[in-house]
Image 1 (cartoon, one colour):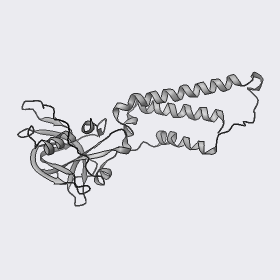
Image 2: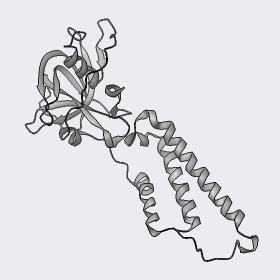
Image 3: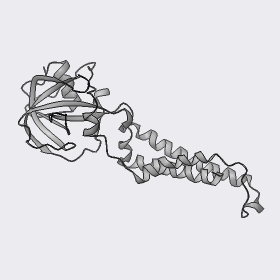
Image 4: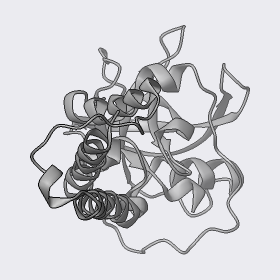
Length: 242
């Protein structure tokens, strides 16, 4: 890999990061809060590429600019492996982790430091999967009793066909994503397809179960209604680890 190839690769990688950061593509890889770092990384790579090209041109005698020369400072051929992440970002946009990962990973629910006050009133209360699960398990559903709840997540089924409503949470990036699960009971749709996103309407129930993967606690939700919804702008849930 000669200097010109290095410069082109740096530019392509930087441009790809900028493209990912200015669209929703970056959400497939990292949490939403890391968007500025993705954009900064792309900008730094492009500036580095421009600086490398400028330095190379400046250090080359003017009469040699149009003359092919033998580059005695080529980098090892393994450097071409750096093209793989570029093509991966350009050509392959993997979907967010879904039911397969959730079914094979135990719930990551942990006890929160506290429970913020919930809005009052008779309107349905919208909660994240992790918020409901945390309050149901570690606060015995005190603030949830008698409230109509709306929770959005995707469907996964265990080996026995039991349905769960799930959101995957991130600490940093998709590589460390872990699920938080809610078991469904009551007026559950008779046919559920894994990875279908649903808005579930229901009420708190003290019933609980254990995750078949890691024996972690999973609360139930008494379903009164449901409807399919599009995949959210950000399919990952960061509320459980903030």
